[in-house]
Image (tube, rainbow over all chains, first blue to last red; front, side, top):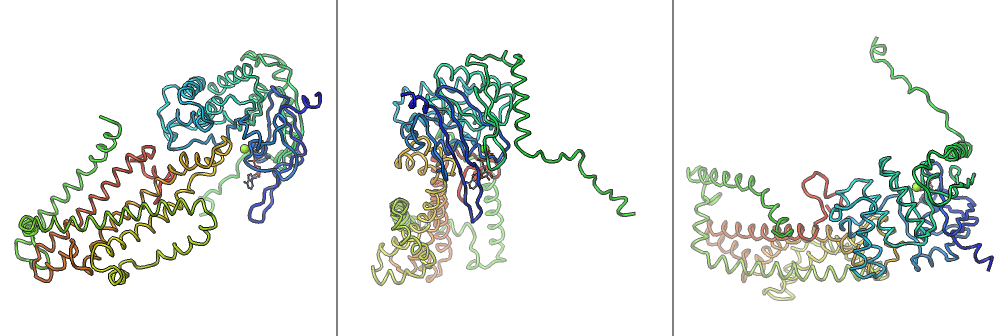
Length: 280
Length: 270
Ligand SMILES: Nc1ncnc2c1ncn2[C@@H]1O[C@H](COP(=O)(O)OP(=O)(O)O)[C@@H](O)[C@H]1O
Ligand SMILES: [Mg+2]
């Protein structure tokens, strides 16, 4: 029984992912281990191309790992998908171009066979939560990137998933909306008890939204640092004023810097040759 | 006004300039031909053509109906067959691998050139004419549909996958929409090529149709009637293409209009 509880949540063991494309092999993730206990919140932080999206895609059953083990509440990705226990917010915040926003938000519920009346209500609630009320009838191409991201988040929330997998979901949002949504998400997670695995570029967002932050090395991605944060689940914007917040940010920045060779910084761009001198 | 009605009306505004230009061209044409500078058999005056239209109205209407029947029957049969075969080939991989390359090769066939063969097989009635229209519509539409059914972005397919969509849900909620721009592009091409093929087939079969009318009025040197038949054939083509355009507006409300490249961004077919 103890063993069983131990394996609940997200478990990643010895995960390796090697892509092969036109004879070129790329190892995106190498021997990665991670445990996200049930109901806790984790972030993946790392330079781009280090395999963060790949890890989420493996969890979401979009790509099959080369080797290693991945489970969510002891289910393999394929089983978890069939049981509809996770929702993925992909990096592209994909929408069906021929569906209006509300129809896109309802898509997951529709595919799950939820009756129309209920999915309308749940979609309306989620749309309001992400601040897109009034845009229900807009087509995706009429929305900004940030609005599409919010729509994708709304679609995931309608599913009330046990596991929320989010790939840079707030990347295209302005600072104010981003922070508001961070705390909306905290409230939802707190109420639903969902487990979060978030990929982000933002150190402060990782601190705001996590119980633990895994820092990844450049490709092939490995977890080089694991920071545990002591903030509990009841968080408010006042968190930023906590001295431990700044300390956590510092720790993560240092870990990010150590994880890879910092490329030499070019202080000034190379001067353009002066045409007058060349002509002279 | 309903949303559909508005979408249709919005399209009509764009016709004002070309109509004005057409009127000016007709006027110039009338002036040039009435001076006698151009021989009437090279270019009859618009008034001569109109006169012929009025005089032979019932004949022209009857032959138009024959041509329209052939074109529409061929268009309809070809489209239905293309949709059925495209679905089959999309889901039956083995059949696709075996049959599709051959169907692609068939496109190289000069359809107009096989009409005499069809006449030998089927006689001079509607059958060979409808067959040639149906064949060309079928192949054009099939090739476009095969591409269209697989044209959804990989990300959309991934989304449907993570949302645990069934094969039927993917067909109805993704492929049916992704294929629409391709299907309608094919139908637009087929609508005009069907009128051309019907007309050409009528030269060969004789018997009836606008093509036949062009031919016999040529033999009897009725230049006005000849031109009248051609004008009506063009009008039929324009009418059919116009209907397809309306269908496009109604069937793809998500495709943005007006901006350069806007349709291309939405995955519209060429
Ligand atoms: N489908 C694929 N085929 C081949 N290589 C891929 C594929 N997807 C990702 N990669 C490679 O794997 C590495 C990690 O990509 P990704 O997981 O998207 O990184 P991140 O999300 O951390 O930026 C990159 O070098 C990328 O080029
Ligand atoms: Mg990524």
